[in-house]
Image 1: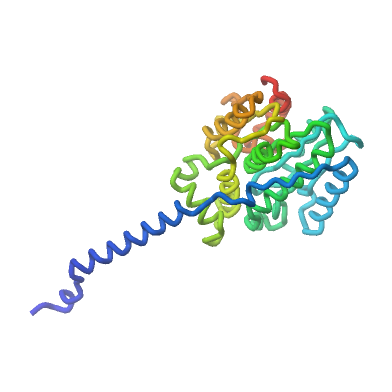
Image 2: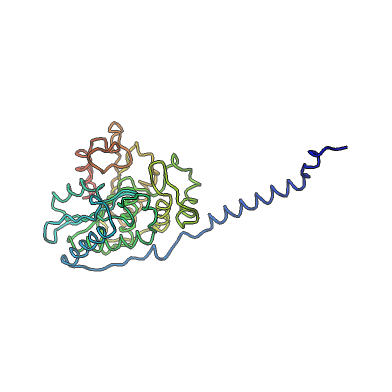
Amino acid sequence: MPGPRANMKLPIRIILSLVIVIAGLIAVLIAFVYLWPLQTKSLQTPNPQKLSYPQSIGLAQALRTQDIREGVKPGCLTTLYTHGYKSAQSVVMFHGVGSCPHQMEGLAQYFYARGYNVLVVRLPDHGLPNNKLHGKATAQQYIALTNEAVNIAGGLGRETGAIGLSGGGVLTTWAAEYRPDTIRRILVLSPFYAPSTIQAPIWQRRVLNVVYGYGLLPDQFSASGLSYHALGQFGRIVANLTSRPTNPNLISVASVVAPGDTAIDHGLGESIPKQLAATNHAIFHFYSPPASWNLGHDIVTAGYNPDLNGHANDVYPIYLKLYEGQSP
């Protein structure tokens, strides 16, 4: 007579049915992720405004005042470096994901000392005492801020460009593609067009952009404290860059990726800016710092920063040359 345990065994047909159901659910989830449309009209819409120098000053001050109202840390406020008049050259700088304008301070001062009017904007929900809140901002908010920052910078100089680090490099690229009315030059530093395969296999990129980019799952954070929601927003913006971007006014495009940067896809860090330059017959330079410098992802922040490894005085002059279309 069979014992109680024998009666608990599931018939093979039930086990197979469960396997089929589970496999079907997995297939549906995969299809859901890969068929979800990432193209969004709101992420492809420029908002150009022609501003005078006084208007630009007023709007830059308004951004800083709003930062203060939101409780942004003092070193993270939107910052304007101006010579008191509309200069020949102006540039807007975008910091990286999870950071704040302080990251660009050294480079901004370097450009300012050489005659540029410089605007360093704070990305939405960044620079707050609770840094985890940087995951709240949406791709649409980043694009709105980019449009506003480009408008302001356009009133600060007769020729305007953009510089961005990491996620800020994505916004800089977007500005070059969608704001041909203003942007003439760009420099992208460690551009986060996609994570490296060390950080995430290629198949996971789509998951990041859809599942976290649209907030379908609660936010999570990387070991370095970066919000998956935030990273997904930049993935959505990248998905809305064009394959043949048109900016007939573009003069120069440059990209810098350090050999020791394990955060980003190095190939895309070169190919996307290169395509932008080639389509518009602009000067293009790709620069890789010497491996012996041991630079990482944040190749901008001066002071104590292991990623820059004490090489601010080496790279800043190179960045200026690249931005101005010269060979380093």
